[in-house]
Image (cartoon, rainbow, N blue to C red; front, side):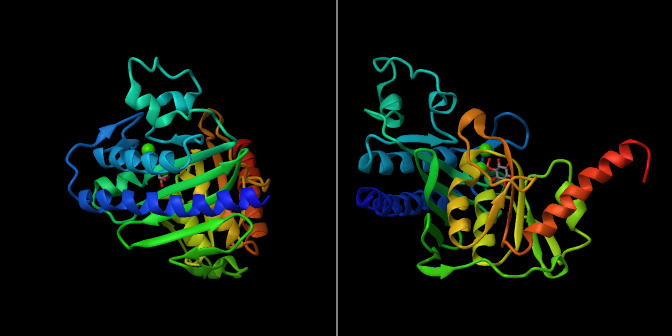
Length: 296
Ligand code: IPD
Ligand code: CA
Ligand code: CA
Ligand code: CA
């Protein structure tokens, strides 16, 4: 147990160092990138800055923890789909960068740039997200915001911090006094259920940062459809350490999964708001069924 605590402490230090180092080129390239590459569709984009940040983070982690696995959104494909890495002779630099000598129970889950869309359009709302998982459980989380030099961090089971100061979720329990943040919500369910009933719903653009806003009390709840593990792993540790309740859309504890990209829905709140959020989502589902049947 002392060994584990020691790994957590070291991991927090290394994640902080890696995130701040990655923030430097991001700050420099912000508003300057000319080439935006489309990945799976027009809103899934990547830039040279994402790759630079990824290389920096991978190098810092690999240097301190050579036997840990690193799963990064912009990392090599064999880390993401679990296939065999290519022959070391053919691609030694790439393979060595991402493949641990002997795998341990530790996996780093990294989003070198969360909010690439914002970044590419010169919007300051983007972050670097780094988490450590121990046997699948997220235990350390760091989210760094280059443009404001804010560092959110936590070790599971301990307090959450922003730039060293303790942060906590709000205790608001009235929806009509609450500020909500919507993440990716393709069918607009979060917006349509809560826009009229809350003080406001914002759509900002970095899932990792949304969870930090929940953790530090500048939002009372947040919702994100189709999450990838790297979008939420670090924010999850930070938000939970700050007192947040994080479930799926039906109220079951949110479990991070690395399989098949995760693609889970996440509902996070300060806790007191959770029952009423779930009730509204449930009513929405029932209402949708009623409408489909022609009733109203
Ligand atoms: C995206 C951001 C965005 C979320 C998307 C993510 P990326 O991450 O977190 O807020 O709604 O689902 O893919 O691609 O900018 O790292
Ligand atoms: Ca992406
Ligand atoms: Ca992301
Ligand atoms: Ca990303």
